[in-house]
Image (cartoon, rainbow, N blue to C red; front, side, top):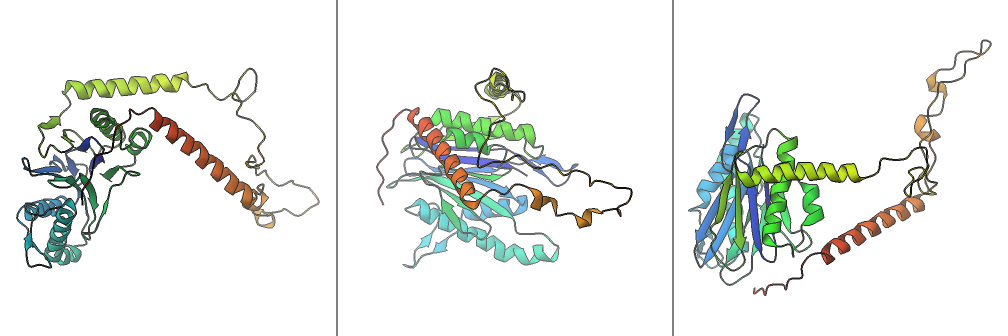
Length: 330
């Protein structure tokens, strides 16, 4: 498996991928999942891939020289298109080309055509763009509301991204957040592994020299891993334990709420010497003995939770340094 993440910010783009691939417990290898396509001063693009390794390698090989006929008769490639949207179309067509060539043989052996990709960058004349490309060659684009994409083992590293990343996050801070996201994934999933490829691109540069490969001996990665673990534990220890017996606490855990009632215990049925034995099948189902929460109360609780989430997000964004939005031409 793998984990790749890419972030689109006002200040630039951040791409991060691991390099582990496995076909069972005794078939673990390292293959890079990132490719950089650069024509200095004119275009800069990065491709991250996850899924079946033979298929992603085939797509990457085809993409470098693949040409997509346009409605005007021009043959489009990633080297001559005038927008990142058209570059994503070329990538999608390359994915479908490999599917047409390989899918039937794969199906005969019971192997799915399973790939997913992140493709982003900037071409002279327009702003930065970031896409997630699926196995069918179709794709979606990152927005201000969703400024990042993940592929592979995404669940472990997602919470920190949701809490930290906005479009206005500074570039170096976003790179740090991506590495924390990767570190959380490395901690919890053996199918993701070192070394890591990190690429940081500054808006309107059309080239970058901020490309680094991080292994277990990288001093910054070791510092980040140790600091995140220690400080996360410190924050956890600073939170009060739940006070079940009340006492002196400003945050009791046992409070009456009209929206949330404690679950009802299921006890053993009473036994009587003169009464026939009563089996569980003669009792009402346990689910029907639970307190009923009115539908409107449930909706009110959902709205209150959404209000709390919105307030937390607004507070987090207010702490971000202000940054003017870049101009964008179409």
